[in-house]
Image (tube, rainbow, N blue to C red):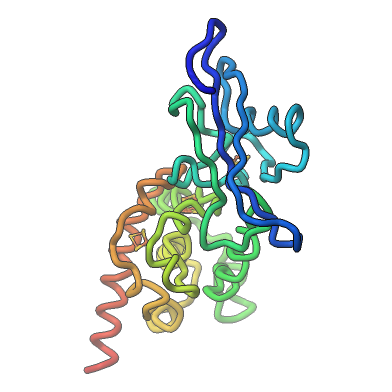
Length: 249
Ligand code: SF4
Ligand code: F3S
Ligand code: FES
């Protein structure tokens, strides 16, 4: 039963549970009731449930401060970070489910790391230099405004919320998502990276890249780092369109 008590609200947290590693496990919703405390986050609530009610509940946390990106989950159907979500900002009835798209480990735990690594390897998200001698140029001075711009895009914590919110990512297994498009836009801006538009077109100039994005906008809505994802996607799309037009002329 949920509602207000003398000491605060009673919360009912419903968790979609399933362990694909266990042959006996079946997807089901399990309800937990607990007393809300001051400053309670979903991280605190889930830990309390695991400590006092069900030690088998699986979920991921490392930093508890919105930095590591491991606690992304669906909170009442919307991707978000559990460690940065105060229960006071939610109704007393809360529904939690794992992020879609990513491989399910169990319950609320998904393997975002595997997905992010595959995406990064595919897009080669590192600075490319033409020759070994060019490596010394990595230390070249950069305009502070440009460094600031790169830093802004580097704030991505690879939490996967933008991917979990994206309709295209749900339909296309190989879609690189806003996180991938943001990374490519970041390296496109970096003067130390030798790749030109032709090289970028190779990796993002198709339906699994910038032309698969249907401008659904959910990615930017849910990004906990408030990254300007739409601006980056629009920037890349313009560059790739110019490149595509050149190829076909
Ligand atoms: Fe998370 Fe935002 Fe990075 Fe997407 S772009 S992975 S939502 S921090
Ligand atoms: Fe998906 Fe964001 Fe594009 S939600 S479709 S990547 S605008
Ligand atoms: Fe690190 Fe939530 S535990 S972002």
